[in-house]
Length: 91
Image (cartoon, rainbow, N blue to C red; front, side, top):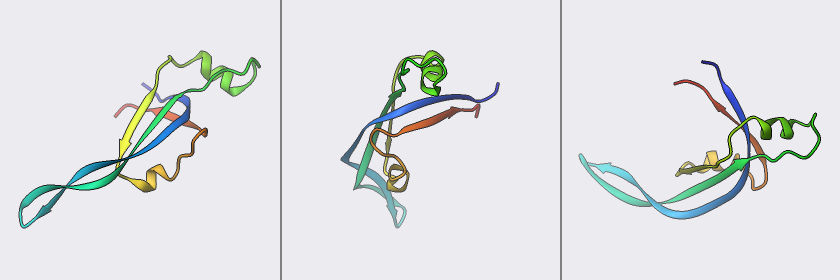
């Protein structure tokens, strides 16, 4: 199986309070930390049959992607309204 590429639009980036594990002296506790949730949806066709977005709109299924992370560096690479490629590759 090869890679399947889809194109999504970043719709929302929400900042909330989450938690993550912290181990001290062999004991694990959960400490508060910022968490970001990014929601994306497939791009829409623009009516031009030759436009990339129209081709992507006709190819992928409908739906959404929602990702939660405590990795601010990853979130900083995304912007509201930006279109991004999402590649599905066998693991």
